[in-house]
Length: 236
Image (cartoon, rainbow, N blue to C red; front, side, top):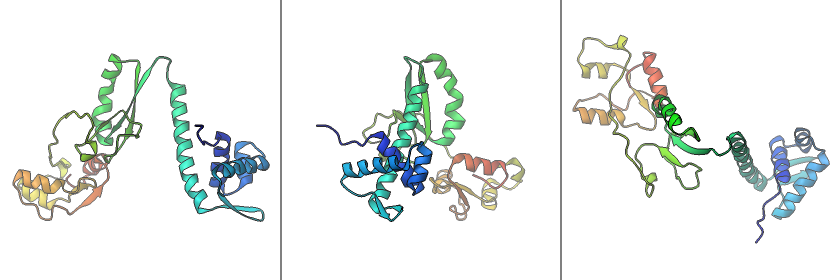
């Protein structure tokens, strides 16, 4: 059975018209006539058997169905363009790995070690994307992920790399002759947003008492927390 897939010309015309909210501007961007844009969108609407734009006199406006479809079409075209550029840039006979990695782990640990891998496997291109949260691997486009243990990886083939060890860090200029607990309770605390209980876990594992372990600023990435530490903003 033949698939009902619109032509790339119709999708590009629709995406440009939806983004600009104007057929004339879409035509200018794609080096077409306004009539050609109108015909491509008419073909698309005929295939879908529904209207994508509300037309009033000389003006057009996306209707709710069109707005939803435009979002998906834009994502699909962007991914298709990225994949096309990737294939065009691959040397003949080469292979690739698509890996999702925690951003700070990637920049601080993985990337400095990739040179060794590349020397052993020069025909493999390793493409890396940052993912701060767990995700469903199936259909993601990734071959592997380097991440924290999580139920999202159920059913996947997993290999433990190492355990996490919580250690407080701060700029040396902030340290005094007070004992560790007094200093930890005195200094502003820095948190990673995705791991809000880290200070509580550290206190429990260390057997120390922290005043309000949840208090303090929050950053999305470990890299941000480390930058705050280097700037003398507190202890992470």
